[in-house]
Image 1 (cartoon, one colour):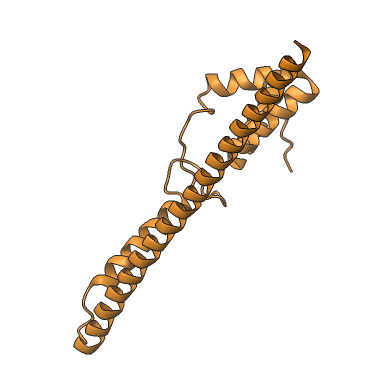
Image 2 (spheres, rainbow, N blue to C red):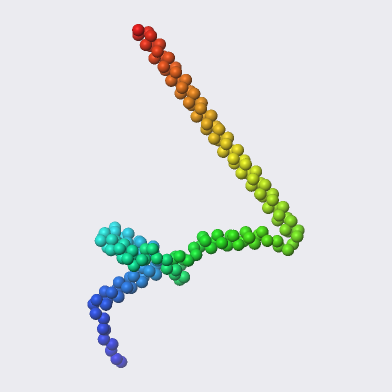
Length: 167
């Protein structure tokens, strides 16, 4: 067996440790970098500040690295909600195409028209409900205002009567 002598210098070992930590944080994503920075600020503020400067300097704070192996789909690639939105659009578009069965297509068209009418009726009901609520609030405001004005007039009349009696 041959023996291999270690040729690492202390500076390379420190750099190697830093590179391993950097690679680990890169693998975990931007959230890990931010969490490390916040913990650095909490426990030893110069470490947090150094991490912030390093993240800005190395463009980790604002970069859009797409990592397909990430379990959370981080990066600038498509987000799950975007994919779901596109899937919904495709399925809605597919629902509008004729199926080839004329009876089913007629039923589908009739049902969609009925649903649109019901939606319109419901929206007009909600509008009437909002108008009624607004009118009730306005009427209550006007009643309160008239009551306060009447109370003020009554109080002013009593003060005037009291002043006449004193004179």
